[in-house]
Image 1 (cartoon, helix red, strand yellow):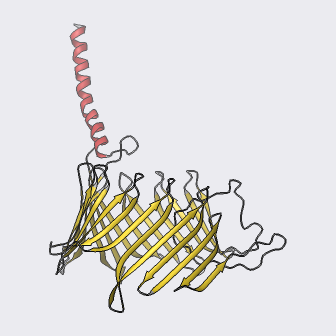
Image 2: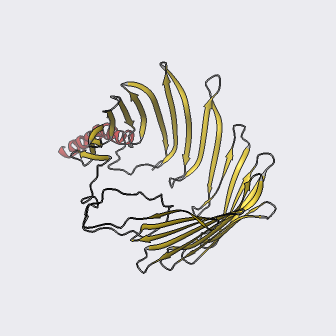
Image 3: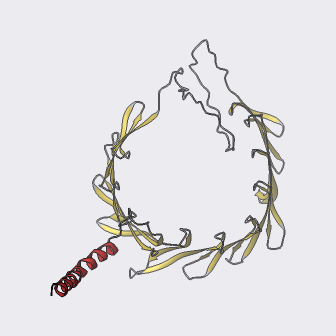
Length: 387
């Protein structure tokens, strides 16, 4: 008799546990843990920006962005409000990818759902874009296309742009060294000068030493009868000489001052800005301070203080050695930034940004306050792909 009683007891015990097990499973489904499970990919993000004026909330921006499962943007929509306060489409952009995940173009629609712009990319067997087509559908519609040629290292060495009548509009040529430095570039296009269509040409030639450091750069620009030429000389990637010519005549020259190690230099000439160039930089492994032996007054210095998690908790900005701004950062127990409060020591103003998050640590609300008065609000909502 003891055996049936024991079996019935076990059966009753298991049935009594079923509700508890169900509640446990339901709780895990209702409150996903980002630490124990992967973060789901965002499918749709909605962002609304409100400006607060005279205690009224005014919608300034409403965007909806859709993503594919790989996190790439596939659709962007901008909305406004009609007189009844309903959502009204302003502009829609659809972005397309092929089965390999390569970007192949986009289409832009206006508020009337009419196509106003499109871009299409064509690829070769090595996944290099070899043709890009742009079409503007406004009246009268027009289209241009660009062809591209690559070298063995994947650099674009030749690109040509044509109109819909196959007339060439512009051209770009590039050459590179075996180690990837830009050696030369020649660009030409058509532009208007005094209501006349003329051809504008720009050429660039660079020279490097055996360390890959640029030593000379020559830029020539020809627009109509005007010819400009810049010749720059470098040493250790720093410019030491810069001469500008116009129609063969020198119009300006900069020469870096030679440092006198026997006396302290009290006056410095700041060279004009150098156009962006991809050059190889050298670093001082000893981490010496280049200003250590030069008399100077720092214009601005920024220092940080971190909390026990290594996150910034305080930022102090000094202007001419005087504290000009202090920013405090506050976090919750999940190391999420809850607010950042800025104190301007000059104007005595305070600015604060407050944040709220969803279960996956994505922001759902951002509130901006100026002198403790709310001036702006951002609302975010998400739709996620199922894991």
